[in-house]
Image 1 (cartoon, rainbow, N blue to C red):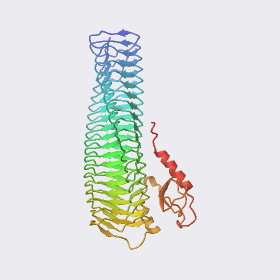
Image 2: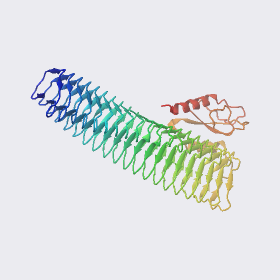
Image 3: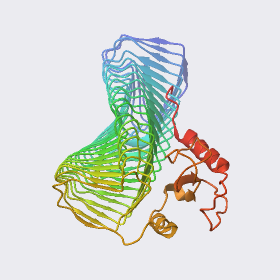
Image 4: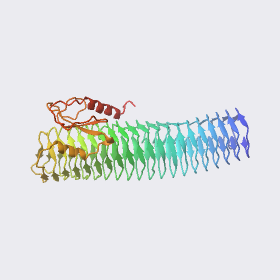
Length: 540
């Protein structure tokens, strides 16, 4: 069946097969409608559309042996709805040479190559389609193509669910990208676009991978249950990533390598058995106002020569360390809440040289801060409270600058200096610790202690240097007479000045050290509610 200049009409319930080329070829501004036809085996494509044709394809089945199921080019602008396209030796749908088109509720499956291939500045719209079980990728965009992709199901493809190369740019909104054997989404070259409100889950490689100098905007997505990494940035990848929930990915939730420079803010990164965020190689990514919670191993690790900027994040409830900085890494780590970890809150080793300033570091089962090997760096104006072991331990040949920190109720000691530790320790306030200072015999550190004890004004000064994440307020509560040493959120009476985090704090009186027990119920309830809201259901 061949339709040339301005052909029209309705062609329904025909069986078309064994053509020498295409079973249907429509061009020349044709506007015909094809409904409920069976398009079978042919030596060419099942349906070819070109020359500005605007044909309508409804409820057709394109099966059998053919190259591409539907191929549209030369500024064609078809409408295709409720069609089934399967078994293509090439792709199910191919759009090229400035093609457009609206594709709604089609099923494209079991193609040998990409289920849908889009190139040459084509600009289609795909809504509510199922693109699945291809031996290549689900959607592939090449060249300078673009398009809008909404509420599609992209499932079980052998390669990536979505692959973009060249200078492609597209909007992916509300899609389900699930169980693909490669990446869920993979951007390469200098591709870009916006990915929002997508469900990206259970993919074998990274859920969302960005390579070369690609630079997407990624927000409001759920990226979970991957068998490898949640988000991967490599090479010189860039982009902005915000308001995403990235959880329960096996290797790590976020992996940043190469010289990547992405900007991550206001995300929830939780529940990975491998780790929360891993900075490697020469990455210089920026992390602000994220909630990194309940990851196994380290909640956040900085290795190799990475030099990130990590500010105003909540890093808490990890079963391993809170923040690990090692190798030859550096970077700035300021105004974070780092609390409630199974090992050290902050660990610095190797030849690392970070700036760790104005953080709250508390409730670690081990030490609050451990600095060892040949590490350097500055550790200034931090509030280190409620850790089970030493608040700060400096070991090996480490030589940090430690200044103006306030250290409260370290369980087994305030500041410990190992046998060969160096560095400078100036004007630190150490209170309510079993042993304020423990200094090894070979220590070369320079220690200048303050001339007076820690007062409420000193603590207020330390808190004043810290801007809590998400504009929450730090409240000091004093309740003498208890033997419990913790910032804990599950007991109504607390022994020392501690931190509580509440969204709508009640007015606090100036006399914070009265012997009358303070009612902490409302603060504890608010903290427990906040913790529940941060944790991601591990059942998915």
